Image 1 (spheres, rainbow, N blue to C red):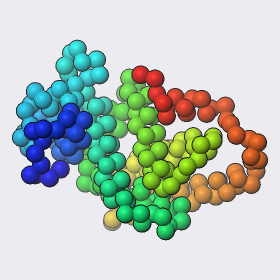
Image 2: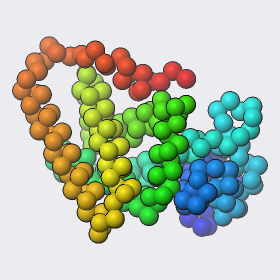
Image 3: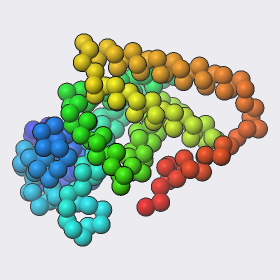
Length: 230
């Protein structure tokens, strides 16, 4: 977030995304808590009451700050950076595996140095009451990556591609957060192996499945992730 950013006229949605990167920095020390939010608000010269309003729990009754809302905003801020970075069309000239690798790697680079914030975010997401929302967060990230990569699949492939990528991304984040190798070399190698494995799987699947196999039994479940009913 730019130090000179004027958030006085920002909407609550804009405020959430603008504050999220600084909240993540504070979360390394304070966790995804009100203390982290207030620290970020002070850095951005945002009224504490307004900042808390932007991140209150979904019920809106208790007025408590929601950790998952802050994590949502952090993910959204990375989404925006990724979309802006690749808006120049450079992905069009890359093989599909390179598009996916570049997009995932950009997301990893964007949060490098914030491993402790990620570790704490993962712990929050793993709480029973947050698991469904965390799955939707992973699905959303995978969907944005595939769309930027140019995927237009509308059949069952739409769901399988996103489900597989979401699992790869989650596994890569788990390696990333513990990776102390130089330049995160272990994470890069892990990601490359997983993407290569998926490319081989997709090729084999295309050979084995006919066009009349247009649906899987779990498509309805995955559809709920794409269009969640709150």
